[in-house]
Image (cartoon, rainbow, N blue to C red):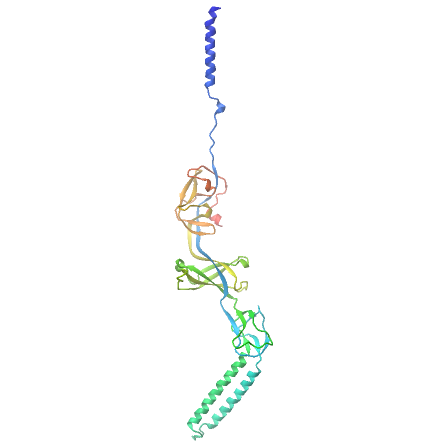
Length: 360
């Protein structure tokens, strides 16, 4: 019995050793792999395009030609031949003033001229004989001229009893009624505006003085007319800078043959001052702008890199990039707010859209 004790003691020691070794070994299922987060982004491929420097402002349309028609003679208005909204031609009769008294004046002036002329002809030298003195003959000659001028005046009064349109256009307003007396000479009867050509006045900052010229094109949009773009051009450029506002006056002219535009309509003006062609452009939303810098993120091998850039013209949601970048560079347009330099990314848009395609 005693000779078995050493064997029992040895077996106990070996069992404890094996148990402690098993407890000290790490478990395979306790190992966990480290998870790497990739920021989802959308990108476009950088390409070249054209971009314009456009100055935007507003204007109110006004008629290039308009006329306030007044009466040159007084009297009772016999008839009104036009109404508001009617188109009239230059020289067309708009109203008639009673001309009976003016006709009588004309007849009397005609008789006076005929009488003076006859007396002058009788008093002229006949076969070398001077019938009256030279002084009296001169008086008769002057009398004939005076009566002739008087006849012309009465003729003008008869003519002016018919009120005519001085320009072609549309009757914007009528201030008189048939059967009433005219309020006085040169009182307004009608207001005519020419609608075939309208104009709008804009004021540009002094810095743009050398960027505008006669014939330059502009685009006008009218909210009251479906916001459809209509072409206009510069017809006048003021050579004077307003010292108080620092602006100068530019007059735009727009063709209105269709008659859809009306004086007084509000217009949104876009005046193209310059254009850069075949330059690098990116969507404006791709930029990260702070007080100190403007930057964007580019992707290479699924790693984001931040690049500080300088920008130029902006147009229709796109901006010119003055900092040279490699063609076919992937530009982040969605998700860049969550990026840092060297961030891992996953590009979720399948199509490699270019800047030119986005612009289109």
